[in-house]
Amino acid sequence: MKISIASAGFGLAIMVCFAQEPDKAPAPPKVAANVQKLIDQLGDQKFETRQSASKELVKLGREAVAGLRLALKHADPEVRMRARGALESITSSPTYLKSALTDPDKSVRRQAAEIIEQLGGKVKELAPLLVEAIKDKDEEVREAMIMALIAVDPDNKALADTTPLKASVKGKYGKLLKRIHVPADKASYTEFSDFGQYGATDYAGHQGIPAGYWVYVYPHWYIWGEQKK
Image (tube, rainbow, N blue to C red; front, side, top):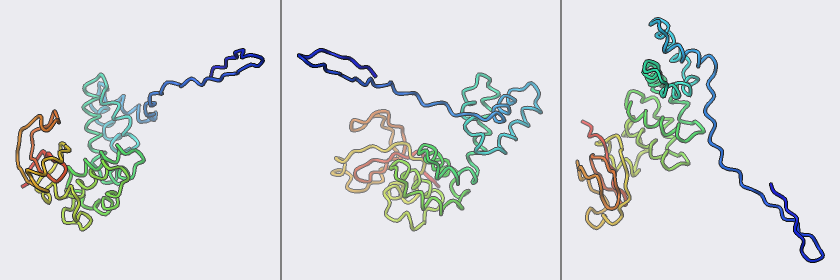
């Protein structure tokens, strides 16, 4: 804060200026000492020590996630490889996913939904939680939760008339790669069109579109990465 005093006729004018503080970068996540110790051991010279540390980190579960994510950028390739393996084991477990679905961080919730979508029927016990999660306040998270529920339980009544279900052609396609807004295509493709595989990279002003399976549900095109058998 800066205060300046200026003379104005017979009086004094006091001007108070509040300088904006620059935005602070988010603080890096804190890693517990026991987790950091185990991560350091992932690069130990002894195989037994590395193997034991990997197993202990997986046992710690969610407590180890933040540290393992940081370890993915470690200088030692052995540490990176083992951190990735431990992280995948933890984040694909039903125990982790149950808690992640209600995490305060929307990115964690969305990532959990994306993992569940990949696991599909292997985690069908999570369907009731996903039914609640499709009511999420964030639009992107809601859509990710719907996609996860389609993969886990495509006949669930909660999916009735949802746009992503229609766009996946009732589970025919999976792994949503991109969604682009093209309302003008209604004139050519009506409200719905299962166009199929297409390799365009630029379309209707949208760039960098991956090749995939295209489905039009007005007003969006949905580009899918895989067609399920």
